Image (cartoon, rainbow, N blue to C red):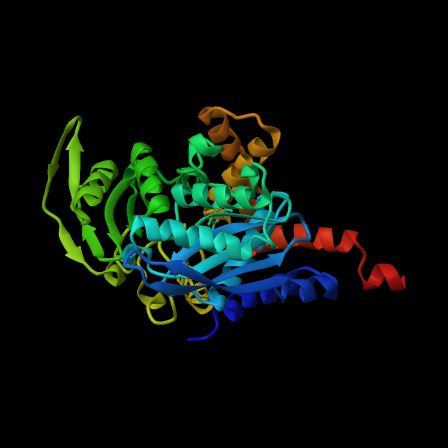
Length: 426
Ligand code: GLU
């Protein structure tokens, strides 16, 4: 397969063809500022020593310290982490957060490790990258297969190394370890704000809207839970093992409870307080992606819709909660078929926005109530989405291009204000 980073970069071609920016901006956005690859030795429970590979890429810090999650996944590569750090740069700029973009990853399947091994690996990763992170340099957070407990261990390790309490080095921590209320559900909640705002604009009634969700991890689950409360009908969900479908609609909380207990998805629905398992169809993830629904939510990994299946997509709207689930070639096909894509760099930005709130609270030493966090999140999401939706209409372009234009202009502003060739040579 082609490089993910080349594909990610190709999005900029359209952006640069639409706005006149100095060469400095293109040059800066074509290269990551710093990439670090480390070996992390971990003592396993059976006494053996295993060495894991980790990466941290800081893409651009023109607008502030770099920011972005850490994923633990067997398929992590430097190419993937670099692309994710590029998307974080664009995302933070789109949301107007005072951050650049970064991303980290460790090549591991945490499901094959004991909890003690995961803790040793998490602390080992922080020791390996401690020289380049910090509350004013680069601030990690959770991503695929990492969670608040892991962030708590990482912040603790960093504070131990620096010999002072520095919770603002990492966000997405547990609430009792200086985390922020509302961070856990922020990505799903933010994505729902974007879908709701789009639905309002298009005159779509949630109660008449069917939704299929690929990926039932943290973001997918919280999105499902909140969308269900807003009246959307969740007819299908999937995890890494496969998908389930039921016409009657699922009750996300009960499905999650069953998954936690038995590690499997089952169609459970509830009538007032009575819940029951009903008839459902099981099928593959690939089939879920091409099924006929109003809204398809992609909440797993990148490269889900590619040139191979883009022609078969039947959903009218796609909400990208994962980073990079649609390749640029597939995007062009969806666009020809008039399928609206609510793009990742906007739709999943709720997570990093509440991470920003957590960092602000850590640095101020003043903690907000959940209601305040949620209100501020709504304000940020709706404000930036409003600009992007208007811009897409005015400039007759896709929401993705409009979002990139919005973010790149902010980054370009910061680059230009430090002086470009035009400034120095008059
Ligand atoms: N991993 C999340 C993302 O891709 C959150 C990043 C953060 O909170 O810094 O946006």
